[in-house]
Length: 475
Ligand SMILES: Cc1cc2nc3c(=O)[nH]c(=O)nc-3n(C[C@H](O)[C@H](O)[C@H](O)COP(=O)(O)O)c2cc1C
Ligand SMILES: [Mn+2]
Image (cartoon, rainbow, N blue to C red; front, side, top):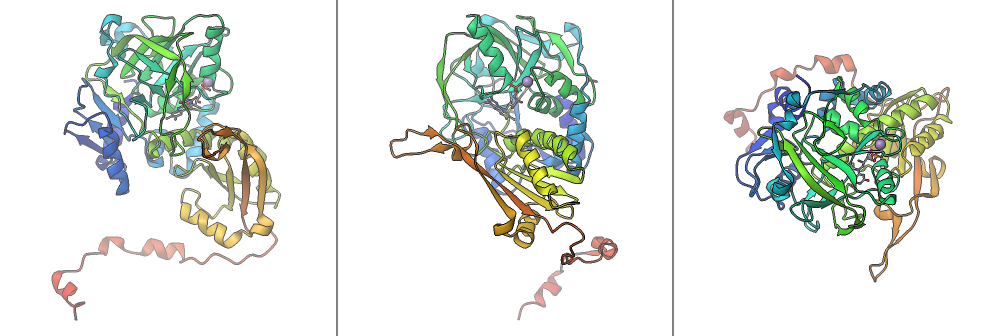
């Protein structure tokens, strides 16, 4: 059976049944869904949440699904340390999609015709306190480039305006917006489809840094490890994923802009917004017992889904320049940071690696930390320890003034004033060299317990103190 959201939910449940929790209590889509995710996050717990009863909706909702690197490693079939390498390698080997008949496409099991479209029947959450309304945060919008005929896909935030209209917010250089502008220039509506609910390989293929317009379906196939199955859309010449949970079909109207926002974005602040184009939904198809997929906006899930593809592309470019690169982490707790571990041959390796990383992700990265191969870049404490012990600000800090911006989604890329009229500005980047000097210099060795002795520790023999033993401690 072709991979989809449900095959992944099954895989996750088998891997660790504690990583999926069912919420049977009725929840309000307005803050109710994100309230569960936030309450659990306060306890350091990030299970996938399957909401069975969402007030006013006729479908279940899954959220908080891709909240850890372990869950990404699970579908890629690798260790967490190897995610950037494996991700990068898979994207180098795209897999062509295949087209299936309508009868074989599970997303065509049910149809809502234009006259009956009512987005309020979908469990679309309002995520954060000041959000302007309900938002699709995990919708993959598909559009065909009218010039090349190529199909492009990406996740863009969609604010729901009414029962059939929603917004779409494109960032500067993203293909989705560039393509939309070509239709707008001709005064024509742009046919689009939005896929909701699919295998994580599909979701992350859609947000991968694919060069040039299109190529996301092929990236999704590579990440899923099999060709993505597509089916003909009902209202346009688009091809859409045949086993998505839900497909919304419609068009971006050329002259119907609408104010949008605020929306809690991945840097954890309300950012972006303004006047955006309107999408009118004309048809909905969905699977039996469809599961609407949400991403917890501004939460850990948003950062994992956005960060991992970046680690993959950074790995590819840095490795070509510094072959001693071990791995990369664009951490989910601050996606403006990037930690690179390298087996250093020359002191010059550090800046070469750091600039290659900065140039791969010039929009978002601002703080590059380069560490030695013995530091686990997936452990923020280790990176902080390396900065504390191997970095000297006077010699090892390089500030690059006015690297990033102006404007965009980083709060530091704006100048603020008392009137609330913000103006875009540039912000700086830094390279922190937290590596030891290159050989043959002798640097103090790291203190460790012998590894073979650590392995001998009999953890299975540990037990709790019994009540008598506990009493021994009471004087
Ligand atoms: C959860 C999530 C939400 C996103 N929201 C937006 C958005 O609102 N607007 C946007 O332009 N990009 C957004 N992105 C980033 C794009 O989806 C991503 O950069 C994609 O590669 C763009 O593809 P494109 O260049 O083909 O348009 C989001 C990414 C994620 C993971
Ligand atoms: Mn693209």
